[in-house]
Image (cartoon, rainbow, N blue to C red; front, top):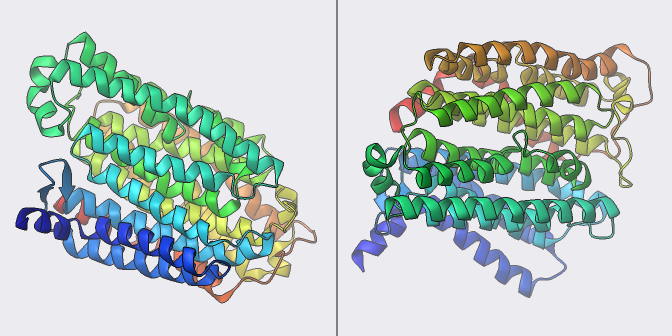
Length: 474
């Protein structure tokens, strides 16, 4: 009993988030029609979980019979997921009220999605990894179709569910094959047995299927086709959560498996990941140029950024691990901020979502335009914003991993991305138009967006804060 109590205390962030979700269920059952309480409790609970994760980061270990990691890597990502979830809920309150879908279920589903994300990062067993992926995915399927009277929202939920279920089949079958080859689903057992089974056809097939399942979750080419339609059809703040925290969770799964458990340095699977990364960078950036809907543009941008981060995973070295961790933190704040501005400009009838709708925004709403410009510069990788160092670290990892060609592809495609990111800045500041924010943003929304912009700038000026944490606690 004492052992399990210790395990619960060491998994503080995960437990606090889970308890928050259960409390929200009870509150919503007894206070139906008053979602403001649920939203406030969700934000408080997630922030408490984030603080607990930061406090417990130095205490690295395992719990629950070696199935869950505690501290270190798990706490680092738990803090990221908690903060991203809290920011998303804070941004969603006024947005959902404006479009007529301010429901307590939104906060509950978001909190339980964060629980799934934390399970993925904390997993020390393939079964826990699978449970985390499924808990996160089921919540996101429902969130994507939250505005159920809207055809696009229903379409987004259906596409995400059908393709997600198909990808889950690949992931689960891959786990079964790895178990067949190793005789265990525990990461430590797999890592110990790796030299003996690394060339086993069953193990390689299982690892390949796991790559397919996780690649779908990060929307990497050729498993990306769901992303543009789902991002466009889902409520904008849900798209923000899917493109940041959910993507970070899937990448934490990539890191814990392919960098920390499977020692595939110089092996064929690294080449497969490198090819997927290059294809994602090329297709995501090239197709984004042709988009006129800003949510679809950000969706293809998300595909390209998945390619950048996969370059760090393919390198399978310490710099890659640290670089992807930093990139995920930076990308979370950049993309949450960008989608937040999109949610401000969008009206309650899914209008004002084209790029031309941003023409002249600087004259109507100078602060909102300035914030959007910060996020666009950061996503393009312009210094001194966080996006620059994110790309620098993953490209450096590729070079150190003897994949210089992949770093070259990344640099060239980053130049392409500058066009469609800076095009929005040009429209806001150098084109005439009647762009305006659909409704006056709430104080909570503006505080959250300004905080995201400040963090993007701060991480660009002092990237060592995250880098040193990753180096020390991983």
